[in-house]
Length: 484
Image (cartoon, rainbow, N blue to C red; front, side, top):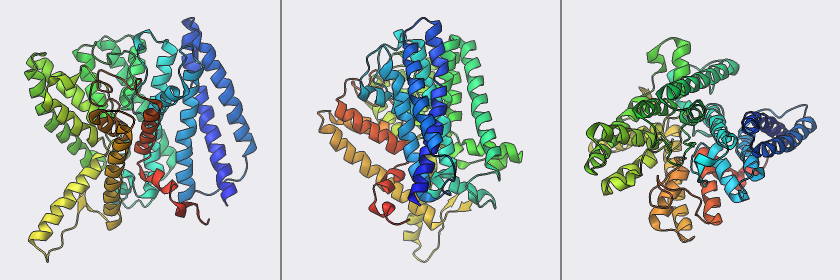
C-alpha cells in the first residue's frame, strides 16, 4: 500500500517540478536578451530539474494509489518542499553567490507567498532573477488556492468545509467536475493578473515592473523589484494595489461559485464583509498616527495608511514607507494586522478571517450560556449552523497557532535577537506576511542579517503557516505512520 503511495507521490512531484522548470524559460530568456550571465544558471537549473523530473515520471508510471488522507497529507507536504528546492536552484547557480540557506529562504518565501527577503540591492539585480522571484510567488499563490480547496478540507482545517453548508453538494468542491472548477480558477486568477498589470502600466510603472508586481499582488505575496517596494510610485499605482490586494485576499471559491450560479447572493461569503470591516477599523488609528507624524498631508496620510494596512492584513507585505516611525500606536496597529490574515480560499495567509468569525461567535455564545444556563445557542457561519467538528478544528488550530508562535519566539530569542524582532519575525513568517516590526526585519529592513539558524527556523515557520500547521503536526505524529 505504501509503495503505491510513494510511487504516486514521486510521480506527481516529478510532474510539478517539471512544470516549474519550464517556467524558468521566461526569466532565462530575459537575462539572455539583457546579455546577463545569469541565463546560464537558469539553463543549468532547467536541465538538472528536467532530468530528475523525467526520471521520476518515467520510473513511476502506471497504477497509482487511490486518494486518501495519508496520500493527501504526504503529497501536499512533499510538493511544497520539492518545488521550493527547485525554485532555489537559479539563486544558487546565478552570479550573485547566494548561499544555500539564503537561496532556500528566498525560494520558500516565494513559493509560500510570504514575501520575506534576504536580498538587497534589488534595483541593480538582473531582471531575470526578479522575474523568477515574481513567478515563484504567482505559481505559489494559485497552488495555495488549489490546495485549500482540494486537500485541506480532508483535515477539517480548510475553508471549503463551509462551502458544503452553502448547498447540498457533499464533495469538497463547489462544482461537480474538478476540471471545470480548475478552469474557472486559472481563468479568473490569470485575468485578474492581466488587468492589474495593465492598470499598473497606465499608472506609471514600466511594463516589466507592472508584470512582476501584478504577479506578486494578486498572489498577495509581496516581492518587489525595488528595495523601496511601492515607495516610489504615485497615487494611481497605490490605489490599484489596494484594490487587487483586497481581491487576492478574498475567497476565489466564492467568486467562482457566484459566477457559475449567476448570483451574487450565492457567491457571497461573510468573510468578505468582515475583512473589509477589519481593514476599516485598523485604518483609523493608522491614519491618525500617519497624519500626526507630520510626514503627510491628510489625503496622503489616508492613502498610505490604507495601503499599508491592507498590505499587512492581506499578508501581501508591500510597503510605501517605514510605518513603525509614525509612533507607538502604529506599531500596535500593525502588530494586530500581522495576525489577522485574509479569507479562506484566497491566496492570503494568516490566521484567516473565517476563524476569527467563528471564535468571536463562540465567545458570544459562551457568554449567553452563562447568562442563560438552560438555553441552547448554536454557532452560525454564513447563516448555517456550524458542526461541533468544525468548531473543534478552529479551536485546535488556534491553540496550535499560539503555542507555535510563543515557542518559536523563545527559540528565535536564543539566537541573540531582541524580543520585538524574535516575536514579530515569528509572527510575520507564520502568517506568511513578510515584513515584521523593528529596525532589523521591519518594513525598511530585510532578513539577510539574521543567522543561518534563525533563517532555518523561519523557513520552517513559513512552511507551517502555508500548510495550515496541522498538516505538519499530523506528519510528526507516530499514529500517522502506523498501519495502512
